[in-house]
Length: 296
Image (cartoon, rainbow, N blue to C red):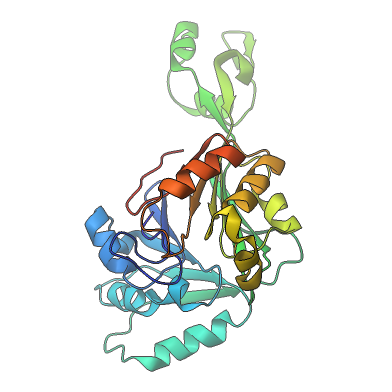
């Protein structure tokens, strides 16, 4: 968690950014002002970033984007960066790139502009996939889920007991195929089990809406904004932000296992009030803080 404040940074909290790492690949969800410095403090290599998921184009969510791209571009062989975002993302990235001088612009940027009708898959490889959905904010805004695929795990002790060694036959079992060994059929379930993948959902800057519930459904971890405590429900409705009660309701209805709330208004000097209140709406919950690290 690289930034947990709402629009205005405080002494304790930077503005919004979340870094997710999966098998060495960095996925950045929003890139508020100062994100690069937060990554330095956290010991994160900025050059690992391969994907940037933009929720929306308010400044506190994208203010650090141009600096990060310029830093990556300055590498001798910079990696390709794929950016996902709502409508107008291509135009806004174009203007950002024109606003500064890239003396050694070697970076390859792929931009995917999204306008999902419901929950839609936007990326998939052999290991994981990403879904997105439109939320209810004052401008086009997206929520995202990163979902680890189920995987078959081989029990090597059982494999060795049978007499098999690592090789093509074990590979077939890994892929869910039966094999014949010493005249006997060995089924994948005899020596392996299915490990259920994990699901992370991130819902920022929105009012409660159907897409938020659907996107977060059965998530192992939901990271949701909670700009205000429940007594400021009218202010939340005015600015289209959620309260602790709203975040807890989404987590409950979506059958989420754990909830972490973030994106707090600067009015809260500590998270004491938010922490106490969110527990009343969803028991298995925590408040985020800058540099908080979570492993799924």
